[in-house]
Length: 137
Image 1 (tube, rainbow, N blue to C red):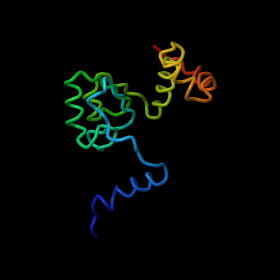
Image 2: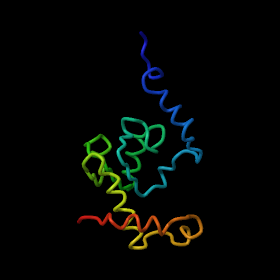
Image 3: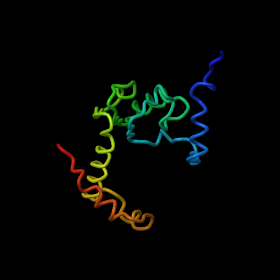
């Protein structure tokens, strides 16, 4: 038997692209980022997560430039070790953390109100659905 990256773990990427579409916005502009939040992903190993073709090099250069990295992951991954903040949540709790962050942004009006008014539908429903997710500080 012959096992290669094509036979073991690559077909899923093609299937996911066929089912959900592909990223068409061009390569990530890591040099322009001030901050990055990784949720349940470890791009230093998986080569996925928006850091381009060489995530280790790109993250290293971005951190040297001042990028702040937040990682939400139950595991202390290679990416989490590089983080400025690592929120080591219980498995499955990442959605609650993200809902709390979204709630904080909305309640404190830390979003572009004009953009939201012009480009979204159901924002008030979203706001109401996030109210139970008050962050526990």
